[in-house]
Length: 262
Image 1 (cartoon, rainbow, N blue to C red):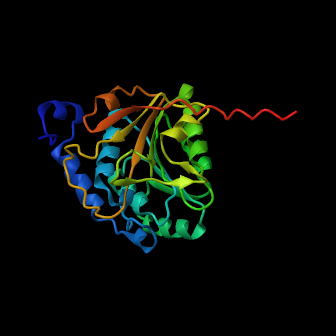
Image 2: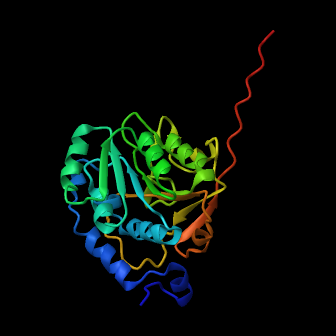
């Protein structure tokens, strides 16, 4: 039995009771080790099960053959992904060797998981070169380094040889309940996508008020997310009842220098 609200939504989502139950059971069994430092209290995807359900849909609809996560911290999301998708290779990285060591210990029993101590663009390039259509959960947004633009450009430029889907965390979706990151006066939002050398035409955001098959129990900080398909047919995303399609804005014009006084 499918769990969407209407028969039309059922046909598009194709979410089975078994899909939802398995996501529920794995999601809530992952210890929230990230509560040691994270403002959302840790947990997979910031303890947002709606995002976990969406990621499952993306993997299923787009036929993703690998999962890449950037910024593992202590491995809450990595742990979930490795346990939820034992038949897919799961890659993650962090630049802090202490975080990598903790995550590796947590995932010692998951042979499908690889955790590296390296910067995230390096991992994205490696995974994109090895797999035909990976799902990349881009969450390396901490400290002075902000590798998101480089990560997205890597995925955009590989489109002729394959496809990829990016899920950008901490993204401005224009909703007061969902927070987002800013670095150096630049918001993690649609304006940033417009700055890319190879900007996508559209991106997708989850509908906060949609008929999700499970309630979200995150009562604290919830982060926005954007989905971007590179080199893939995005028709399933356009037809998805729980996604909104949004146009990437035109890049802001360069400032005109003031005339020099004579």
